[in-house]
Image (tube, rainbow, N blue to C red; front, side, top):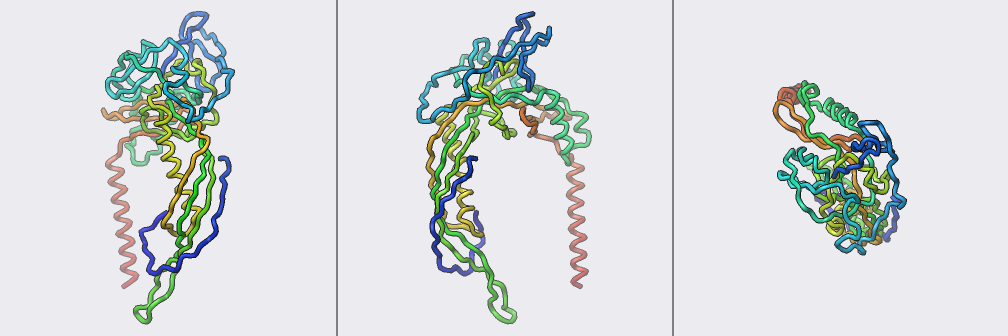
Length: 374
């Protein structure tokens, strides 16, 4: 915490004994042919079987006999010991517009890029790190479209006809690669807590309340276990990231049948630097709260990380856009919980009306105050 207010008078700094606190443990497209008719099998959100859309045949998704592994960061050396995504039916594709790299069947090269609508081109790319886990889709296309309509309905300043004129385009399911990091952190903190109080000073017309601050030095050690800190493993567009990684399953290629997955383009060491910065910024705020007071000063937090572990996980999202009066807006829908984020048009009439209403309300309040004083 901080404050721009400066105390008029500071008392001598009092010292307090250090304290120890411990927190509670807190794509690509693959081809699986139908054994009956040869069509491509697909997996529906939340399903445990592959289903043929042509003949209706079903096939159980093979489960991985291995548990999800998290690897020690200090032991990772490029290249990763296991590369790729575990099957050979895909080809690497790169968007000529935004540069997004995906793996998919050759047929999807005729489809637009799921991010910018650009042209996908085949290109040889280096192998990427093999995922250890995947969070399955729980939301199908109909559910995602319903979530979008509900999101649009709640936009107060959107045009009234938006819900009726929206036409989704380039809307598809995609798995996004993220690193997760675990770390047992130990933060040594010190600083001064300032507690404000007020005293009456002066006399007569100069009598007034003066704020003063009593400062107390505090220090301590805070232990905190970081579990599954998420960091993008590729250039990923903004959107809701409130996935529950606790529901992840060990990765097998069949779980991604009929979907697209973005390739991992970063290594764990690069991802850890971003995760470490985010973790330590959060721990700084926690330690400021431990120091307490109305304001703090001279705060120092030194954090050590132990037992750093990582894994690559694929997370579900619906991505695409919609057109409204010839303008294109981008939308994303969390494939697990249905949370929507994206762009929207604004109604000039509604915004103008709201501004005029606020100005009229302020005018009425000012009039009442003036009348009361007179």
